[in-house]
Image (spheres, one colour):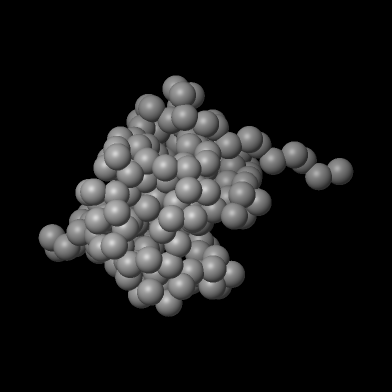
Length: 198
């Protein structure tokens, strides 16, 4: 019999507002941590998300998983894909990730969160970053990336520091997912910003 997936913790839960604990490298191979990573991947995929941090399933550890699929990217217009620099990438796991911003370029786009269900807001983030950490086998990995994958990394690593995207968003842009789709789908970000007044 399959084990039920854990629920995604919603805004208001203390675990989302605390700094997650480092995972001792010698514990990464443990059944407990490997099972947690498997559950994180399963929850992210079941929710059709592109990233998940361990605190989002009530585990205060510094682990993130991320993946962007062909199917998810295909839902966007050509303009949206190009502006966001969004392209599919395979599953990645980072334990104890450390993020470094690369350059001064910034970009603003809507972000949502599985822990703030039903809403999105405009968030400005670094356009390019590099992350260094350990993979699920305890092997050091780094990834330098720009565009949408860089945004996902920043969003998920924020979770490990008790930060939600609503802390960084332009507050007047906060809107339901349905309203955002109805009003802004397919439009260039410059037009969206003018419409909102940010």
